[in-house]
Image 1 (cartoon, rainbow, N blue to C red):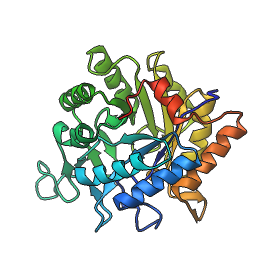
Image 2 (cartoon, rainbow, N blue to C red):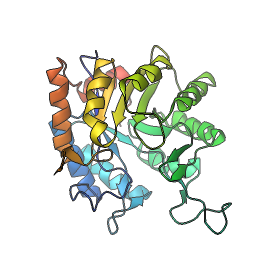
Image 3 (cartoon, rainbow, N blue to C red):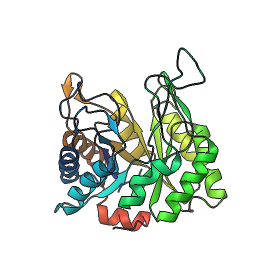
Image 4 (cartoon, one colour):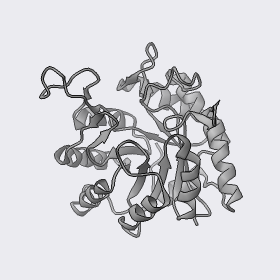
Length: 292
């Protein structure tokens, strides 16, 4: 068991969830305020996407990232900032011409995905380690793009959180390390339960953690009803944990959640198992992060 786990809160995500739960933050102020509340509830790290303030839909606008990040940095509550660098990767084939992207397609090249990281220099950013069927669309991230993107992140001095949605993506992350594009003290996130990636269960966590280097740090999260069970399972297997409205909208069946409520519930689970959530400063030292 990990008795001093790092706890992340993914506060908003990119999905069309704002109509399902009114507490999903949309504007940069709402995202920052929700992040600060999650930090006060015990989150070590907050993971940020941004949304168009008018529509609530996914945005890649660097200025929106900048406002959210600056508001968090100016707060009197310490928390590690982890911003998405997944960017536009959604591919939906056109019904008229499958060689072209149809409605819902949103593609960015590595340099475009890297822009918020390059501009804001957070302590951590995500690096999605491959392509995958993501529900009825495909997330596109070919190996050549991954290599280019990993090099950009490495040059920036930001630590990549290696997002692995399936076991082959762990192989790709290890290959990036072998090629010198990701540094040795690797940080993995096992993203579980997403159709059609790795399952959210104990056996999958055990296998995935067995495929990463011994000196790596790792966490796992599950979506929906699997969020809290995976908090417990990840910590029991020696890992870190993640909660938040990006992955799950409910505190319990039929009861909508806020980010601080999900964080508080995860803290309770960890404490009931005999652990204590790691502070941001201790996590910076453990993960060798550069605070800006």
